[in-house]
Image 1 (cartoon, rainbow, N blue to C red):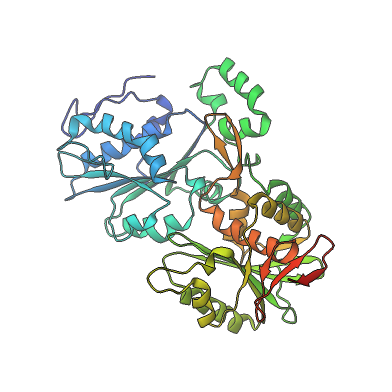
Image 2: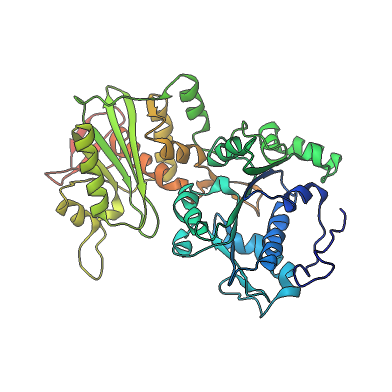
Length: 440
């Protein structure tokens, strides 16, 4: 590594101590407003982008410059970037770092703060002069389009996207669109070419990790399967067999819905047709920060536009829990909105995941209308246990959980032997493994 020159020789503009890795020099010298960096593990992308934020904030001549670093989770931002931000901004601080808000105030009035994409509402209504989105592959794309991008508009702020590939998701799409676009700065850093990590260490990592994970983590392959993904094999088969395509809606067949209801985060709804044993995922909707009346309106709008008829509405068991303040449950509220749910009983999550796996092998998915839901299924994966260095049986809870959980509710409630509270008679209905049904 070479020592970087300080802007203006220990000047007010950039008094920070930062040892620059040469591979990032073109990034710091860029003139483009937008940047995307695809980098292998331990390349130093977080250090480089945190320093870039601080240096640009110090050069800012606007009043009260505002800069942000956003990680998929708030705790992740704290673990990954907070110590770096405090360290490199230290010579230019106007006050002690704010440990509660993960914020530093600089001597020129600019401010740099850390955020988590798991709580995008913290960013709503702000203006930003610059932002870094770290591990963008793990974020819900709407965080950028609906929250961060508007915050940059009035002050023409810049954005940098960084990460390591995790399949062909929004980060891959961003990289593909940016590569060759003169309005974007793009940089691909593979371990085999940067020489940041010693060759013998890379060889040992390849032997221990396997080709797919090594290709993804160190050689920046978007083609490698997402490690730990629950539905990777099923979705690969669906794609190879041409079942991820444009799926027409048969107006003579009822459309069922399957929901995952969020409280402080997103609610997801799948729209599904069943023709014999074939399942057709014909539409998908996801939103956050709105009431149940919004979703009732979505169902009515789709019915009117597509002229389809609704069948059953599958929802998880916790909608029956009553609120202390009103004494009403979300089940009561939905019934008041003319949606009469089938309540799927609580069940083992892994059993539900296996039900989805079986279903996906006979499922067609509309690639356009179900785009966000399809990406959620691709990203839904096991949680990594860093202490044991192994995958947990349980799923990782992130933005992809909502769409995946909603489809699990349908598979468990419609196809598999899970107790469901039916509409009308409110008795408990069960199915056994042969598909026979009875009333308890």
